[in-house]
Length: 638
Image 1 (tube, rainbow, N blue to C red):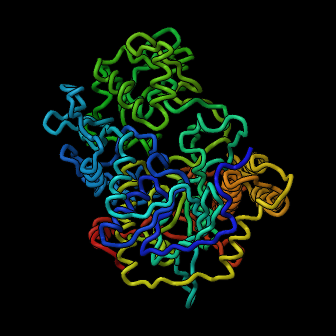
Image 2 (tube, rainbow, N blue to C red; image 1 turned 90 degrees about the vertical axis):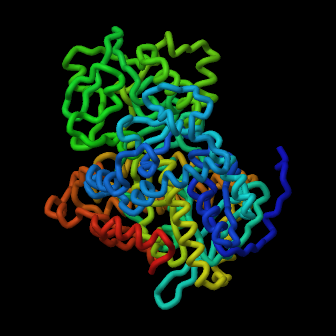
C-alpha cells in the first residue's frame, strides 16, 4: 500500500523559539502555557495529537494531593512529609511540595479554561463525598478531603484551547528524537532538539534558549507482545520513555532507575483493560468485595479494627489525622495506612474462597453511581471499552458482580520480571528549579524521579515552564554542533534505506526477553553484566538490520532504539546498587550487606564519554521544604 503522505525525508528544516517543550501531555501543556504567559515564544512538540495525547489524553477521574483546596485539612508540608516518611526517604520532596502547594491552583486554571471540576448539575447532591457549598466531590479520605473527583475527559481539549489562545506553536505528530547541547568550560547547556514529522519523515532542528522535557516514563521494557498491544496497556502504547533515553545520551543525571515496582497493566496480553475487573483499588476504592459464596470481605482500618459501614472506609482511624490512599501510595506502611481490606493470607486462613468479586450493589446508591458511572467513565481508557461496552452487554451494577482476578486485589497475576515502571519510579535528578544538570534544560511530570499522577504533572509542568521562561531571559539562541546534527539525521533516517530487513517488533520482543532473563526480581553482577553485553549486541547486530517502509514504522523503530538505551540505563543503575533495599523493592543474590548504610540515599547515574558514571545524593538534598519552596516559587534561583 502506498504511503498516503508526501515523502519529505530529504528536507531539513529549522525552527526557533525562546522555550521549547518536548511532550504534549498534561505537564507539557502546562509548561507551554506558563512560559507563554510570561511573554515567551513557545514551541511544543508532540508525537501524537495534543488534543488527546499523553497518559491523561482519554481522561482521568481523580486529582490527588490538592492540599490548598477549600475543604482540605492537611497542609502541603504535612502531606509532603508523610510521603517522604512513607517512602523511607525515596520520595521527591521538591516535586511533591510543588504538587501539594500548587495543584489546586492548576485545577482552578483548568476550570477557568473550560474543564469541569464540580458537580454543577447536582447529580450527587447530598452524598457524603460532596461539599454542598462548593459542589466539589472528594475521594478516599472524606474527612481530610485532599483528593478530588474530576471530569478529566475534558481537560486536554481545554488545555489545547488555552495554548492556541496564547499563540503557542504546536507541532503535532512530531517525534522529539535528540537533545541538542553545547559544552563550554565543562558545563553542558541545552540549545534545543531534533524532531521528525511522523507522517512525512521531515527532520527539523528546533533551536531554543531553554527546553522543558515533559515526556513519558518508560514502558515496554520487560513486556512486549507483537500481537496484542494497546488495549490492556494503562498508558499510551507509544509512550515508552524516549525522554529518558534522550537525556541519558546527553549526559543527564538520573536516579532510582534500579527501583523494582509492582506490575499494573501491561501490553503483554496477560491482563485486562484498566478497571474492567472488580477490585478495590484507586478508581474502584472502596468497593464492597465478596468471595465466591457471596460472603463480604471485611475492611479494616490502620489498627486492624473491622469497619462495619461503607462510610467508615473513607475515614481515618481513631487518633489518626489522615491516611494515604491512591496513586503513588498503593502499599502504604503502617503509620499512614488507610482503610483497606483484610490481608489476603489472613482471608485464606479464615476460609474465604476464591474467586473474589466487587459488589457495587451492596453500596449506597450514590457511591455505586460515582464509581461505575462517573469514575469508570472518566478514567483513562475506560469510558468506551469498559463502561459503554459492559453496559451494552447488559452489565448492571445494581444487580451484577464483577470478578476480580489474581490474588483478589490485582487485575491479573504477573511473573516477577513482568512489570512496568509504575508507582513513584526512577527519573531525572533535578534541583528546586526543576532544572537538570544540563543547564537550561528543565523537566516535569513523568520525567521526574518518584513522579505522581495528574496533579503532579500539571503543577510541576507549570513550575518548570515559568522557570524555563526566566532562564530564556538570560540565554542566547545558540547554534548546535553541525556535524552532530547531520550525524543524528543520518542515524534517524537510515532504516528507510534498509531493504528486506527485520521488523521493529522482532527487536522489541528480543529486548523485552533479554530484560526478563537478566534483570528479573533477584539480581546479581553476573546476570546484569550479561544483560549489558546483550544490549550492546542487539544495538550493534540487530538494530542496523531493521528496516522501515515508511515514517510510521520508522517512529516505532526509534522507540525500540530508545528502549535499548533505557534498558542499559536500568541495568547500569542496578549494577551501581550493591546492597538490598526494601523501599526500592531491590534484591540481590550477591548483596553486600555492609554497603546498605552507605547506599541509603539516591544513587545517581549519567553517561559520559560512553561510560556510566555513578554518583550519590543524600535523602535530605532538597533541604528545608518550606524554605526551598518559598525561595524558588517566584522564579529562577541559581
